[in-house]
Length: 149
Image 1 (tube, rainbow, N blue to C red):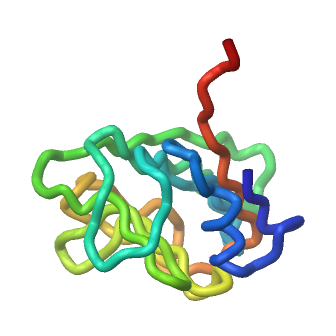
Image 2 (tube, rainbow, N blue to C red; image 1 turned 45 degrees about the vertical axis):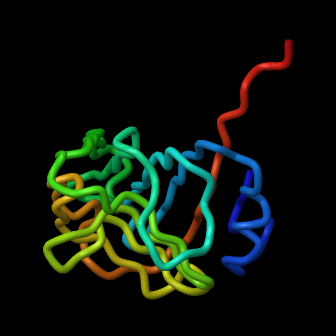
């Protein structure tokens, strides 16, 4: 488990906390109040090539007015479109999910600042956030582990 609030802003810490975790759920809260993220089918790792499987997906849980606590949030999930296999991408100081069409579906930059969400071919998603560019106020990465027998 990784938590931006307690583990710090270093992407290397997120990678270390996720070592050995085959599948993870990344949940982000933006500086605009949006909540979004992705399900990663594989362990986050460094590399120049995309990896992962069609089990990956993006999601958003945003309100029309994030400043209004009474505005109901709607969950939208964007599954693999089958158009490409640009699922996961891990670099030293960033991670991304989805690609094609000039945008990542979800991009988390160095120190979780300068992040973005755009339409991508992998998931045929709408932007996950109210504003394309954002900073992360909170990030949590949860690992799925098999039960002990």
